[in-house]
Length: 287
Image 1 (cartoon, rainbow, N blue to C red):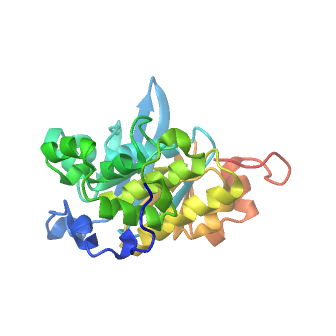
Image 2: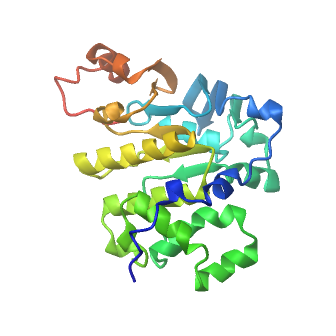
């Protein structure tokens, strides 16, 4: 059963206002706050310092790439912002709230406003694409509607529109095992579209993809965030992706801020400072 490709995509759908407006109940003081603010943020595990007094502020709507050597603390930053980890020192503010201090309903309410995309796509093998993309709506549905949708998928017009926007209109009823790595990443982006988050946290979305597929998926995420005015924090595994359209690049080394600036400022000299070796004289740099 294929989707009707003649209909408009989700980005221009008449129900977009409903999706993007869901879950935004913060007051004027929160609205004026940056999307993300880390002040002296530190994190330790088993006596090892992963982050050391990191200061970082991300304005709303800004699209930021996070780079650095393996083990530098890039993914830890995303997890602190999402409230999956608590800082051992300093503070983390996400959309005007302190996720490490929230519990229960308050934490779930904040997470509904966050888009989270991991390297492994988080696709359930038994769920067809229609159901997988609709997971993006669960934060706005009562429990009974979510259960009902497992048997009779709800709001399929939104799913079809999102799939058209990511170039997957013919995959509505496919299973994850029938998709390539790049196609699974596109499905994960479609799920973010239906969620309509205010802040996207994306962890190395191009890992395991070839160069062309990597560029396409990163550009797709950047375009989606830009159209909706969403803030974006994305760890990337290749410096070649920095020219895809990021507003800013933040480099972390050994748990500390090593560099911060526009993509064009990351010259070969700065790469040496970040990675501690000559990128032209060794293997390809990955982060």
